[in-house]
Length: 130
Image (cartoon, rainbow, N blue to C red; front, side, top):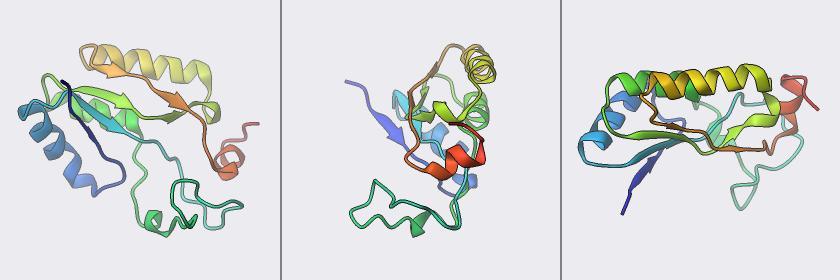
């Protein structure tokens, strides 16, 4: 049986100690979601809360998962790192492939790449993607 930790947008100072503790406790995976920005005004409702409210995100840090996993890999030994999920359509595919392959090597092949869509039109507008 494998166990994972899924955390996103917590206090930045908690990530490395949390990754270390999870690694030492025998967790198999540390998973992160992906967000690039918090739009002041959004066209649609947030799809992952019953009411569509997204105010809990107002003060959340939006840390790049590639950068964060690189830092976590330095302080851990066994735990794998998974994007769950990375908003691929709003990123340049060639540069993303380079980041993914580099992170996979840097982490000692402990990176697993999960992709998906963004529910926010604002992500596409901010990155000038269709």
